Length: 331
Image (cartoon, rainbow, N blue to C red; front, side, top):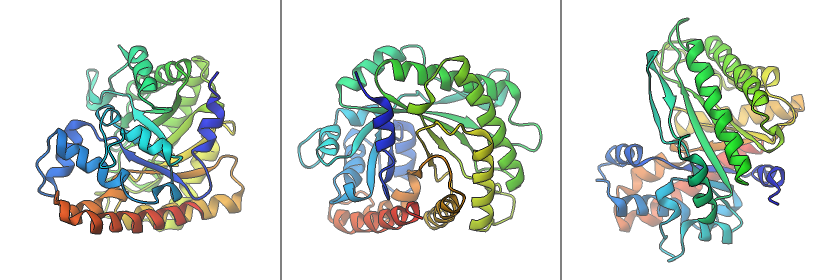
């Protein structure tokens, strides 16, 4: 029988975190277009290989979240990506949701799809080498009106259903309620919404009899909205983020990873360092680390631009940022 608790905890090896390389075809196409790269199956494979094929990433990464397409692709070492990662002691995971769509009752909010054929897909993903999974729910803040209660509850129900199915399939679930950075809201409003989201989520997880000891929470930091005109100090971010987690996350949870959520690489790194430092001082009950996508990738993509001759320099940029983020995760 798979020891899901041990797998979940192994994602929190000291100084290591998770690379989120799980952009969907749509998102990867947009991301590559930002750097003048036209997307295709092959350019997406090269995009993944830029990061997964970099040397010594196992020193800073415990896991990599892949997109379903990537599970079946090979790197420049001619090995399937999950095989290549596992050989270096990095756990391969996979994004299992099928993206967010407007919520019919509240069209400015989103609901995540993908439960319908999830059990069958989980069986296939496990055979393809995945040992953990991720499901993202998108939560939008707009003044005091959003998020609505219906959006919170429906997304929590789907996260819980997903988590139960993943555990039943012998796969660790990462639950990602992503509170969007976009908006004019204050950091205090962000903190309050994170609290509402987590309180609802853990209540619903209990109703679904989800084992909390083998789940990983992927959460946003408490930040002022990107259009608020306010820049939070790392200490403010750390204090509010940790306060809301202590209030709402059960101590049994295997660990918490932070998403970078629209922050620049430097902002995400500095805020993570402040959070982990403060968490040590407060003796938090769970391990903390990172699960960044853009904050780890953007500098390398700006160098790579889809050109093979730029790969060594782009990988150097990636490894430099990874080392900084890894140091930040160590507090």
